Image 1 (cartoon, one colour):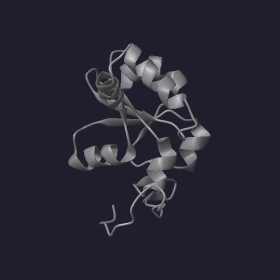
Image 2: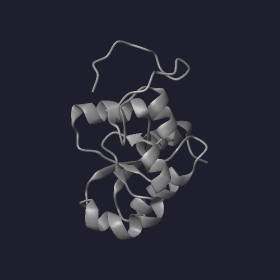
Image 3: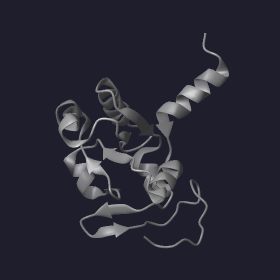
Image 4: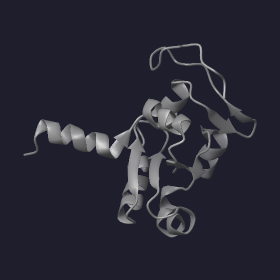
Length: 139
């Protein structure tokens, strides 16, 4: 039986959320964000600056495109999607330091962080059920 403190420490070691990921991006710490969804989902919008690598392509593409030792955060659509976990597993098998962004793209958007699509980079309104609307600089 695992100790509660060990469980939550492990959970935090393997997961992140939209807020923490955005803080890391704005701090410029070099984490690579990977969108593991389909091409159709990618075209609808994605985390600004993310790399598109569907989870089924990770084993082949990651070693060619992402240097060993790079910290990676993967995401899929939402809490109801397990493609993020599948993608994280593929990166872990390859030896990458990987985390899954809980909440996926849905919570990234709902919390008002920068999204990218064919029109460029923009933000959508913050959903008051998931984030606190604040005055912030546009990016």
